[in-house]
Length: 112
Image (cartoon, rainbow, N blue to C red):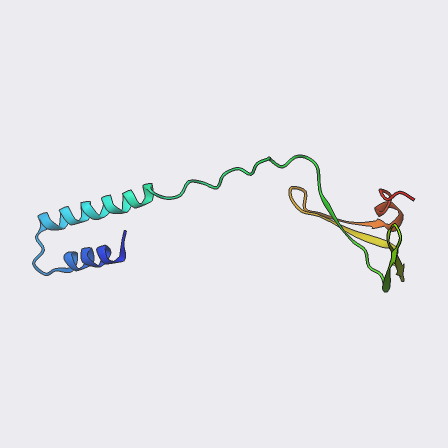
């Protein structure tokens, strides 16, 4: 309902010379207007596509004291010093998990 229409409705209802018949008609019109406004509401949030599967995606956090990135002919070389003995792993939806893994286990997917 528009604010200007609501203000006009409020002034009409507050009128001192309002008869019972006019009050019932105004109340019915107001309820109809509010009911129709609810019918025009947005639909529910659609389901995400594709739906989330059983696979959990992890974010790994590795702490270290310092690092040096050096360019090489086949890419780049990363030298890490002061590496901590564990890696923190976080998973968001749907699992919401936190784990602490040994460095060797966390980096087991990297070829030697």
